[in-house]
Amino acid sequence: MIYRRHWREYGAAIGFAAILGLAVGVAAGASAIEPPLAGALFGALSATMDMAVGMAIIGAIELFLPRTTAGRRLFARPFLVVVLAKALVYLAVVVLVIGGRLGPRVALLAASPETARLLATQIDTAFPRGLLIAVASLVTFLLIMLRHAAQIVGERSFRDIMRGRHHRPHAEDRFFLFVDVVGSTPVAERLGPLAVHRYLDRVFQVASDPVDAHYGEVYQYVGDEMVVTWSVPEGRPGARPLACLFAIEAALAAAAPEFEREFGTVPKIRAALHAGEVVTGEIGGSRRAIVFHGDVMNTTSRIENATRTLGRNFLVSEDALARLEGAGRYSPEDLGSQQLRGREAMVRVYAVRAA
Image (cartoon, rainbow, N blue to C red; front, side, top):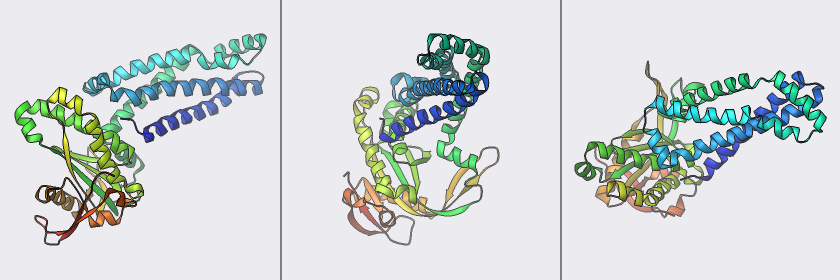
């Protein structure tokens, strides 16, 4: 499922590519084409067109392909196979756009025939197609590798590690949402371990779009459970963790026919939301990771266990509810203070339902 945030990011990517093309086109055109003013104008039009069209095509593939059956089959292949397949497709896009001189052809439409012929000769001399295609292909391949490497550890975690945001451990308030897939054990007994792996993989794939759309970050997968987190400033507006939870439920319901056909069952979820202070920092040697230490995650797990004893699928702690804006639309029902297994202190919990 594609959300508004995905479309905004798609538009932003095209806009960034167009601005980059504009800057490069002005500089290159002014230095290589006479007269410089006409060269700058021509370079701006042609490079902006090339970059925007190229990014529009590649961005559309990145946006839609993972959500198709063919895309899911491709991404089930080994990492190198996926990267090479996408690199070949994107190379074809580069050859089509740059090799076909799409931008210059459009820009030349505004020039007189004589000026167009002169500019076309200067373009071929100043910007050899082979060199442009080689550079663009290399940059595209490196970006594909970088994107897929980031997806392995999580794009936000990858950015944070690159920026050194959590190089020094620090305390912060965070939301933690534990989402448990109900009934995965009977599914495993009926289908076997390989099929249940595909089943859980598909569940978490469906859940990933709502998480991205609501600015969440998948912290980890533990068996049939997914842990999603937000910093409090990121999660507070619009009660994003709760909006995310019910968007996951809706996405799984929309995908129910597909699950029924392939696995003979429709996934259901239970979930718990809690918030509090954790220590965030990087750990590890050859493999770096961002981790969260504190009692909040253990408490969230205990609250998720309480969904069974309390007979409610979605529970929220008082600490989490107090940090959310607009949570009232989820009709929180006060279930009182509960004694959670393994904890001395009582925790007040609320049941919530879709708005």
